[in-house]
Amino acid sequence: MSTDTYAMTKVVGTSKTSIEEAINGALKSASKTIRNMDWFHVTETRGYIENGQVAYYQVCIEIGFKYED
Image (tube, rainbow, N blue to C red; front, side, top):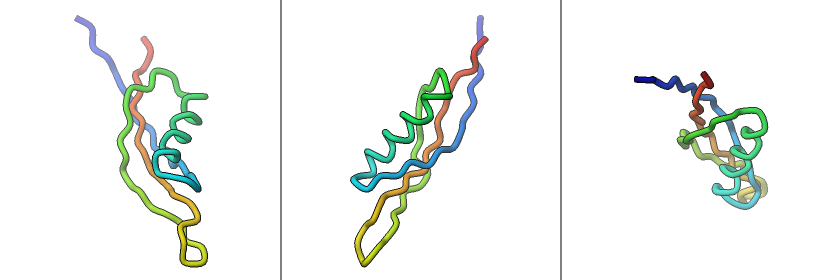
């Protein structure tokens, strides 16, 4: 029987458009250096305000990935 080992890393994505775009941007950037990504978990959502309006969204995520044998 084999067992798998996983690790997690924290990433913050940003977007001027939406929370979803911030998540997708973070995953796309992380996928350039992290292999075997399996899941993500949103740990924090916040935004930056300019002139009383949302300037951009910030989304903190934890990404789980499997170690290679």
